[in-house]
Structures are given as structure tokens and as C-alpha cells.
Length: 181
Image (cartoon, rainbow, N blue to C red; front, side, top):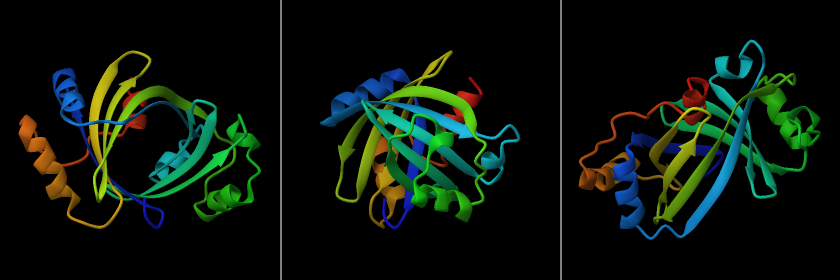
């Protein structure tokens, strides 16, 4: 992420391609993360093209606010927290983000799922290979997240073409897939 901008290109893949990719790169950083997303009863966060989540990795909790800028770019604000409940967060910086983006405080959990994420680092970004467990299904996704400005679409497609794939547009987000589960 650079300057609170997150650029990611993502594509749903099948289990066979997932396994081929998993064995084609030296994924050195495998983590299990549980993501819990929050919104109001009226989906006020979603209406702003945003997302609020707490990601848990072992004993570490990371608060994230994402606001969509365009199809594959988000403003992303993250901070490690100690609160268990989203409504107990008192961190002034996070509260400022809520105010800045008109995020209400009466949030409740809307979806939760667990992802096994494998990461391979390139010079200008990270290739993430995700296996995500939802309540009723499991899916597989490959994601390229820019960490510096370059032609990420060309680079991502150069990886995908080896597997007979091409990125045209992002697949639905994990939160959208969880809500449709």
C-alpha cells in the first residue's frame, strides 16, 4: 500500500489452477486470517462503497476501513487494535477516519470468513493466492496488489496467461461473496 491507496486486481480461479499456482511460486509467507465485516442495519457503509473490518491473525487484530475510489483502487486505512468489539474502539485516529468518511458508529457484524493466504513478493507488488472458507462453500482467488506505481494489469496478465487466464475486471469481493453465501 502506498499513500493509503490500495490497488488490487483479483480473479476467481478453480482448485486445480490454485494448486498449480501454489506449486509454481515459492510462497514463503502463508497465513491464516479471519475477517469480520461490519455495517449498519441499513448498510450505510456499503452505500458509501466502503467496508469496515477487523482482521484477526493469531492474537493480532487489525482494523481496516476501505473506501472505493474506482474498480480496482481503494483508499485503505489500517491500524492494529486491542478492542474485541468494533463499537469499543476509542482510538482517536480511527474515530477521525469514521468522521472523515461519515461512517456511523452503530455497526454490527455482517459476515465472517477465514482465508488461508499465500504471498509471493515481486519488486512492484505482491501476488496473493487465497483459499477462503465461507459458511457454505470454499473458493479460490489470485490477487495482485500493487505496492508501487506501474502497469499492474499487464504484469498480472503475464502471470495469468501461463494458466490460460486473463484479467478483464475484478471478481466480486470476498465480502460480497460472503454475503451471497
